[in-house]
Image (cartoon, rainbow, N blue to C red; front, side, top):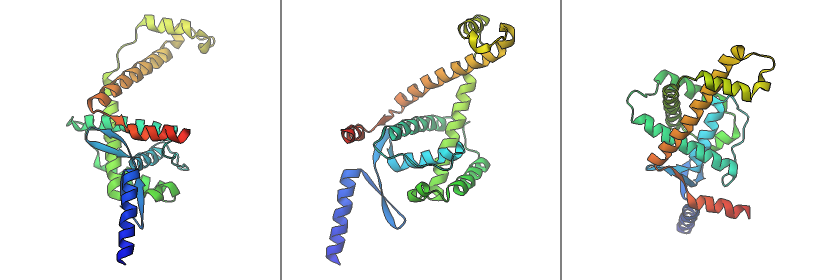
Length: 225
């Protein structure tokens, strides 16, 4: 029995050394790799997977497979999650951005219902307490983004409308400038907001020192050789 305990301890130490973190949940340990950091928060691969799965419910896409770690697709998800965490930290600094308890409970029930038969979700062994934390973060981030988007809306000039119409005239078939004007203003307003929001994301990532784990990126490159 003593030999078994020593062997198990040695195995866990090896896992911890090579993979970064061991999450003991359920009947078997889940290996979770450190992939990024935002301020003092260490982002793990398991965390990114949970975030991705929850996003599928928001997007009404329930038959999904979580991308493998050390792939370009997964690191795109890491980048997205790191940005979301930066927005969340900014939301926490504003007292007017608060989670709605009714909305939170609605999403908890929805995620649990929609994902209870999903194998990828089951393997993550997410507790309801964890789920509430993730959803609180996402809902507050969404509120923060909407708040910013509203502040970024500025009037579109007639000259900008005319320039866009002349440049993309073929996209409006036989519509006159007067008839296409409102549609063009919506397009330009959306472009304006998206550009400013992306710039804001970069500011927040710098403010909260958001970064992916360079060791993990090195591993990713080595795996491709």
